[in-house]
Length: 446
Image (cartoon, rainbow, N blue to C red; front, top):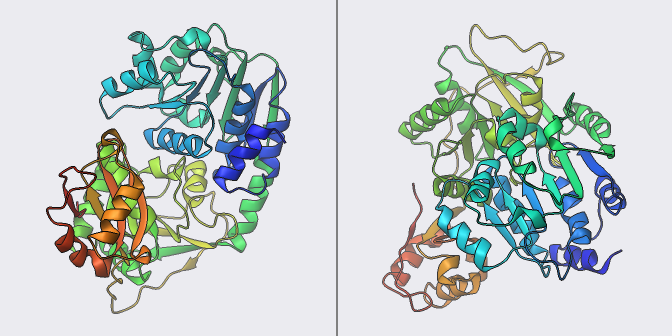
């Protein structure tokens, strides 16, 4: 195996690649463009980042590779994986929802070899001349099907038209499109289709690892049924899917009025609020995420126990992607469909799922083991995980077991702390400086 790839896998603590990733590597050296089809959660990010290491030139000048993605969250996740590989090359993440000026400084000052970005923001940078597209020789479009579904055709066509030096294109998707638009410019193509195996495994999961249940709501407004269901799940991690943003906001608000703590997630929220919600859900300081289908793909959310369809999915594909957030790899999970008095099971659901009987007396879910602490400094202030951990250990009186994952963003950071230690920590670090800087350290309860 290539030395650069071996080193990257070592840094990622990955012992071996799956069959799909190996196939992508085998075809990376050729001149053909590549279409890779593989189910959600199968490891497609590595399937193109590792071949990319073979294409990047050590002495290359300018941006060499462009990775287009449909969402900010996916862009940030890919950037995190790329940085964790610890390669000689730099990457710049470009997405809407935060100042474009910071990205411009990064593009012009750090001279990244790889740009990871959403089509709209990359188009903005091209229009402002913030990087030279002529040096880009490799194009990756991750979640190509989702990009088309969200209407990014014009932006992607505009971007690709400005890449005269393209030698290789890689398109990745969890579904097989009937036709690839001409603007993609594919020439000789090798198509790697792992969907057949993935679908067979998913069908097997339906009877073994993925359990499907229906919950009957006596009222058209299903909020009370949802509340009782969530309380009955004993604090297990759950994603509640709604079909629209305003429904997410409404469900979140009504559950809060019932004193049930949840986080919400949809495309209309500010980026810091979305990042905060995902962090809290990942580390377990919030057990329930209320979301649109935005959370059904492209997010690294491990070990989700329950998927709850508050609204029936718009189609079978949406149903499959939602359920794909649970019962991954060797894990088990449950998919709940909440049906109102006039609702019937969609035709694509075969058989009759077992009915989940809600308990007569609704229990209160347990309090999460972890809480999230917000720190008002981040990467731009040169803050590191060691700085935060050092303060919490020395001044806050915490042990290593009391501190969970630390996530540092551009101008702020999140830290998971044991719920039982939060009050002690905040009392002891009040007024303390971190790395010589005064900063806000508080419980993130928004």
